[in-house]
Image 1 (cartoon, rainbow, N blue to C red):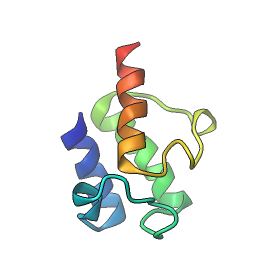
Image 2: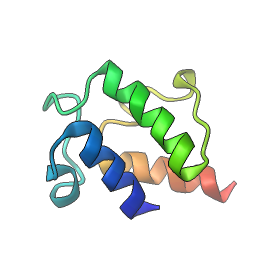
Image 3: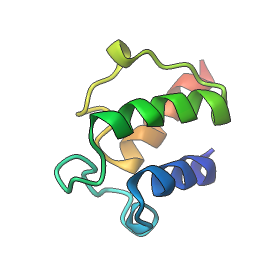
Amino acid sequence: MKETLFEILERICEDDIVKSNPDIDLFETDLMDSLGFAELLADIEDELGILIAPSEVDRSTFNTPNRILTYLETRSAS
């Protein structure tokens, strides 16, 4: 799951820093905007089979690769 998520993020952010610095704030560094966020949710559903409604999460939940991974691991365990 981690590898797939980081590949998705690298593609959306167009930067491999998401792999080398998984605690980077994607929004504060302008690596991701609202369109990228929507694309991320769609790609997570397509590639990982986890459906996340935009109203379920906010930027503080999904602002770093590690936080996104933690959230997805929680969702896949339930």
